[in-house]
Length: 350
Image (cartoon, rainbow, N blue to C red; front, side):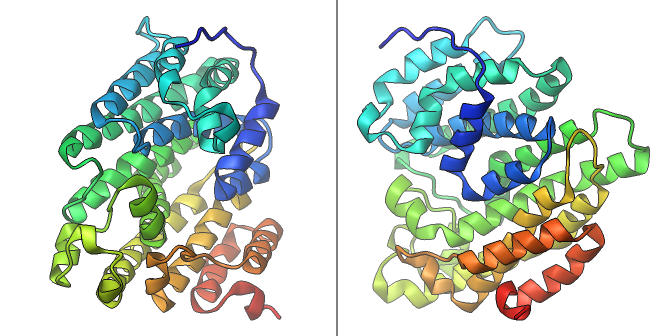
C-alpha cells in the first residue's frame, strides 16, 4: 500500500478522463454547457470507479465487495470513511502505471475525482451521492450473489432488469436529481421521475446485447439470461462456441428487442427535460439515437455480438447523428428515431 495525499480539484483532468473511458458519454458531456457539463462529468466518473472495480475479474469477489463498500462509505456524508482509505485499499490491485488502462487510471485518480466533486455546490452533491451509493450497493449485492461462480450469470429477465437498474437506472436517477433541483412544475417532475429508470435501462440493455463477447472474455460475465439461453438449448458458458452461434444470436436479438420496449419512455424522458443549469436536449438525444441505431444493427446482424469485432454503428453515422441532434429541437427526435431505426442515418440523408 502507498500513502496518497489529498489532491486539488482538477476538472480539466476529469474531462480528459471521460474521453478515455467512454466515447458515448464523452459526447454527452461535450454537448452540455456549464455548469451541467462539470456536474455530469464528475458524477459519471464516480460511477466509473465503482464499475471498474465491479468488472475486475483479477480481484476475488469478496475483495471486490469490500472495496466497493469502502468506496460507498467514503461517499456517505455520515461516515468517517475517506476516499483516501479507498485509494489505499485498492492500491494492491491496480495494474502497473505503465500498463494501466483509462478505466484503471480513473480508479487510481479517484481522490482527484472526489476533490473535484466536493468543489461542486452542496445541492449538486446531494443530487449525485444517493444514486451513486445505490449503484454501489447493487454491485455488492450481485458480486456476493455470484461469488462462487467467479462471474455474473443472470438467471431471467427480472434479474437482468434488476442488474440494469443498478448499473444504469441509477444514472437516470442521478440526472433527474440534477434536473429537478429547481421548481419545474409537478407534471414535468412526475414525468421525469416516472421515466428516468427507463432511460437508463434502454442504454444498458443495448450494451448487454452488443457487448456479449467482451463481457464474457474480459470479465467472465454473462448477462444474457440463462432462461432465454435454455430456451435455445444453450448453457451460459457455451455462448461463444461456434456451433451455438445461430442459437445465441436469437437471444441477442431478443435482448435488443427487449431494449426497444423502453424507447418510448426514454423519449418521453428527454421531452420532459428542463433546459436549465446548462442542460441541452442534444446531450441526451445523441445517446438515445445511437441506441436506436445500435438496436437496428443488432436486429440485422445479432451474430456479430458474439465476435471480437462486435456490433457498432459506423463513425460516419455517429457524426451524422451528432450533427442532426445539435441542429434540431426535441420535436424532431421522434422523426429521427424512425429514420435511424430503418437505415444508417448518413445514408438516409445522402
